[in-house]
Length: 470
Image (cartoon, rainbow, N blue to C red; front, side, top):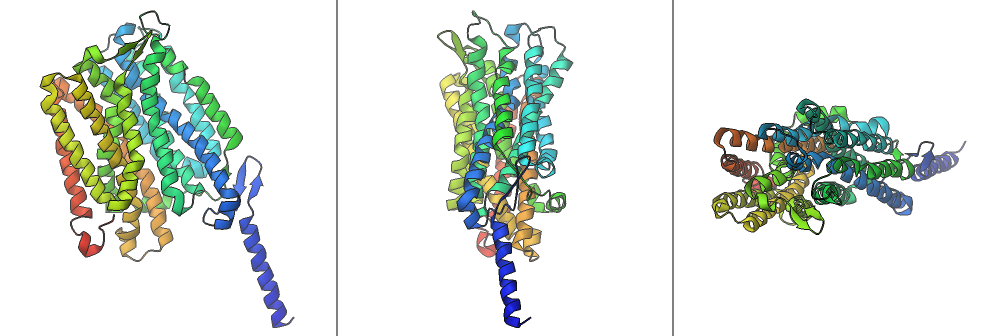
């Protein structure tokens, strides 16, 4: 065989290999092989529409996850009216236990997509939401339900918190790097909105046609049809990717990076504040301003608590966008500064007993936390690409991206523990002093500390080590 003929065969084989790589292989069970989002030809011809379809159903499923995660924070405010007699300490445990379980579940949920497939796990994780919703409906129907049973069912609402990690991990595999940030931002914001929608819809639903009382079981049962729709949509329209591989080794390596723990602390301050205050906001309104706990609109009761998580969710993508312009570290420092000042102002104006001022200040606090969420999340891949131990040791881009991906999942899990810490700190403060004020001063101190940590590690030496745009 001549050299020319050998070269021709080799070129043909290479061309065939490229063609095979470009051709998506649709397999039974809605599995897709040969997925390569970075291949522009494949992406523009078929990949973008497939990714968008999976993103849409992922957002819907994750949205319901946040709804379920927040249900107990809404229901507990109504328990006395339904005949339940729980102490303040027990009420705060019902508020905080879903966050504790949800944050913990985020770690194993991160690895479920590579193990079972994104479509398959979305179906399973959606159907799991039926357990806490139906359980809640059954528990609150009977005022004699023991506290231990209530706490167990509230803990099961943590299934909703775990959904975030698997949903974000799944969408990461579908999108190219150049569009990943926006896709993940939409996925996160869509999920976060679940907290706001739950706090808006549940008070209306439980008082609608309830003849002046509350129909608490509706708070759980009303979501069952939507959960079934999400599971059906995932089964019918989503896909599994053979290229979605687990990275336990990457996660273990990321745990050894000091920056992971620094960013986890900052994320507790931003996302932890968002989810923590979302959980306690209805309770705080009822304790400080009982007359405004619910506002009658015709035959239904409306709680203004939904406005907090709503503005926080909407602010998140804009925090990421501003971070792209001025740097995530600088945006995060500004967010913590705003959160500290707003919290102090809220403390100092509480003696005025002005509900509308209290509401505006808390909405500003939620907005600042939302901006901080977007900015902090934006920092993580940049830090791991430029200043992590691996990057400074000369690791390849593939390696640093792998570490960053693992770090995002772990940091989101650690940050979610803020949803447990904030209610428990407020409870401890109230138990010890009869007031929430010491807890709020503690939050101010925490925000100042986190501001200083962010400045020290990511801004102080910006000019010397080119980290100014982290």
